[in-house]
Image (cartoon, rainbow, N blue to C red; front, side):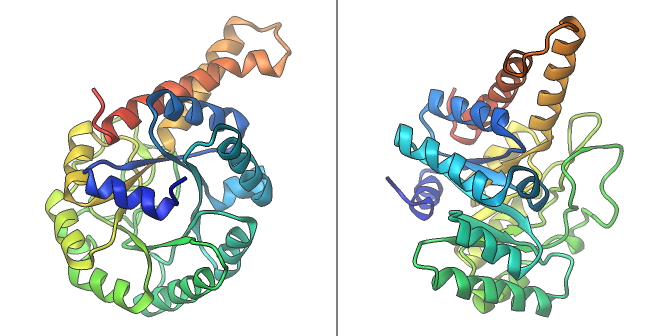
Length: 289
């Protein structure tokens, strides 16, 4: 089976992207896997620090590995937005395929120092673990928003600079980079986010020569995704849309079946709702009609 590094490199070569979807429980994991398996495409499962605290770090690793081994399927596990070296090490030690060291709110020098230490640890762990750095603040919460998150600005001067990105990648040795290119975490209540800056994506990609990761994909259009992928994005993150689909399906079932008490019956509709969202996104990312 291909490593995650090989899978992302192949996606970049083919002008498609690997879908990255977050989970907080087993139901979402099955929904995501079912969609990926149906389409025959690789997929990345993400767990943020909060999600890891809920699911369990080693438990998340064991769950994904069990599916990978049973189905001989390219499903990978990423430690999404991790804010300390200690928690990056924890994920690497637990068997994660990749980690995101998020120093976007730190100074450039502090971000470089933290990312560099994480890269060094990953290289010495005995496995091929990808380290993703983040440059440019895009918010921190995957939820439905009434306005663009506080601290996030979308003017060109506030986006990640290709020159600064190149300096960051050279100094840290990260394998992938998550830039600020008009994206932000969460999605606006209207369901449609502002357009991505495709020219900035292309400029950063050409400057650094490693895969770009688009965070905060919930709410972006299929046209923006495809243009961003063509410009150098190799992984796209989706979380808020999954959460909304899960919640809405669960709420509807409980309203229609107030006497049902069996969790596996109550949660089936939520699994299906997640699967439907993920399938649609994976078709877009992989250019499947």
